Amino acid sequence: MNTTQAFNGVIAIDGPSGSGKSSVARRLATELGAACLDTGAMYRTATLAVLRSGVHLGDKQTVIKVVETAKVEFGTTPADRYARLDGENVDADIRGDEVTANVSAVSSIPEVRQYLITSQRDIIKAAENGIVVEGRDIGEVVAPDADLKVYLTADPAERARRRSTQNGANLAATAADIKRRDTADAKTTRPHDAAPGAVVLDTTHLDLDQVITALHELITRGGTT
Ligand SMILES: Nc1ncnc2c1ncn2[C@@H]1O[C@H](COP(=O)(O)OP(=O)(O)OP(=O)(O)O)[C@@H](O)[C@H]1O
Ligand SMILES: Nc1ccn([C@H]2C[C@H](O)[C@@H](COP(=O)(O)O)O2)c(=O)n1
Image 1 (tube, rainbow, N blue to C red):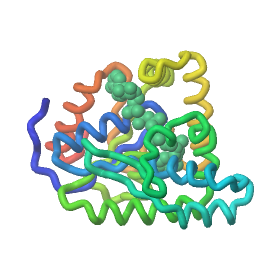
Image 2 (image 1 turned 90 degrees about the vertical axis):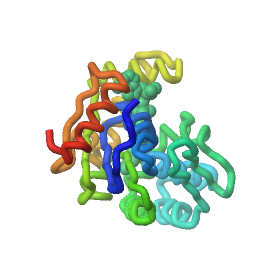
Image 3 (image 1 turned 180 degrees about the horizontal axis):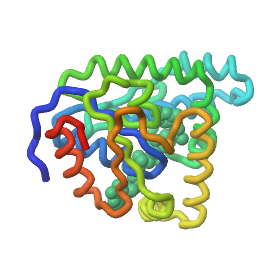
């Protein structure tokens, strides 16, 4: 394991589904003594709030109202990340099939994005010991002035293999689901492109330790390739 580096800034990690953003962000934040923010969990919790409200997804104005009034909380300590809705821990529910199938529709609504982006910026501003933020639009939209921007990717077959190993799901179905979500998300964000100024890290042939080592080297060098 790497020794903790002195770090007090913002690291933006973007990339497509299953590229390793969450695992990498959590471990890097732990090693840096920083916070970490999973913005996908925020879109997922908003989606769960909408599904639980019973509102039709096509009723955009009501969907927006539900998202803006939902009582949500997000833990940003790497060892204690959580998402809460109305005081209830919803970590498992937000990663279930129903939320996964509907999250791209909710996250495509501009007002929902604007509301959550404002929350994300508030959380980043409040982080006192640095923060690693991961998602799809962090380096380009949420935190374009981040100290280090990384675009984490891996080829689709490898991303599907990792995801199906993680959750035991059928490999072909997992690959199809990843493709479907990347395609849907591409209408809103740019999961297939690096943000301007981002370092591209293709992890297809790297294990988690090697990715973390590469990121520590980037931090030491100030983000240059
Ligand atoms: N470099 C790597 N080598 C091998 N396995 C990895 C690597 N990076 C991540 N993984 C594994 O791949 C799986 C998916 O990773 P993770 O959930 O971090 O991806 P993600 O980009 O956050 O996905 P999503 O956007 O769908 O939430 C996890 O089981 C994780 O442990
Ligand atoms: N910054 C972000 C983060 C996430 N989303 C959307 C797109 C994803 O399909 C969904 C769930 O994210 P995941 O948990 O898979 O990382 O949320 C987004 O639009 N912008």
